[in-house]
Image (tube, rainbow, N blue to C red; front, top):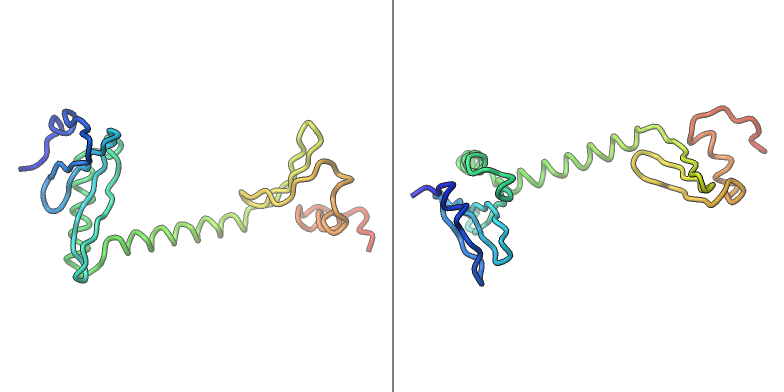
Length: 154
C-alpha cells in the first residue's frame, strides 16, 4: 500500500529508527531524533545498495517517487544510480574549480589595515599590513591583480 502524507506526518519517533515503506524499495526512515529521510534499497551487481532521496519535508513524497522512478529506469538500463550521482557530483566539483581558476583576482583591504589577496573563492594571502608583504608577493601583485606596475624593482 502506498504511503500517505497523513501517515508521514503522524509518524512519531521511537527509541530505534523504523521504516515506513512506500513500495518498489522506497521507504521513509524515521530516526529516533525525529528526522525523516527518504531512502531506496536496490540490488546492483549482486550487492544490496541504498540510495538517499532526500530529507522530508524538503523533498515531498511526489518528488521522492519521481527520483525513485528515475533510479528504476537507470537500473533497467543496467546503470548504477549511485555511480551516476557520484559522476555528476565529481563533474560539478571540476566545473566549480575551473570557474574559480578563471575568476579575476582581487585585493581586499580591511578597515583595520589587514590585506587579503583573493583568487576565485580562496583567500591566498593574509597580511597585517602592506609592509608585511614578502618581496616575492609584492613584486607578483601587479601580475596577480593584472594592474600596471609602477616599479618592479627588477
